[in-house]
Amino acid sequence: MTSMIKGNVCTVISGSYRRHLAGMYSLKSALESKGITVLSPVGSIAVNPGEEFVILDEDPIEDHRVLQDSVFAKIRRSSFLTSYNEGGYIGAAALLEFGYAISQGIQILTLEPATDPNIAPYTRLLSDVFGEIDLTPEGLRQHVERTSDELEVVG
Image (cartoon, rainbow, N blue to C red):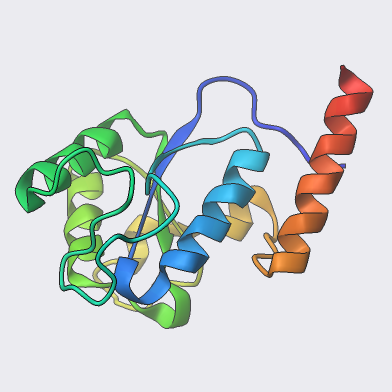
């Protein structure tokens, strides 16, 4: 039985939109199926793939600073920051968001262990908190089906 989070728990998923956007959206689906509101990333696709600063289809504007400031505001509203750090990679924007979360006293949960000795003490593994999350398409499909079945039983 999959446990559903009760209450208003939100997060921002931080990571490289250029390298890992598809995986970040898979993680978003998995967290949402556990009852967690994911404030960012928004939308479902990059409108300018390959560009240095990625714009998403539901970003309301294209000004880089205003978009980053909006992510900071979402981090302040979050229960924790989630890091999609596949292969240990943490990009420059994600590192900036880590520093911001740390300065605000917000816990950082990572997909994989943080290897940087300056960052590692501020992080915990996502799996330590929520259990293993299978981010493969089949794993996500099964997870969503199990969650749907549980909701039908409850309802």
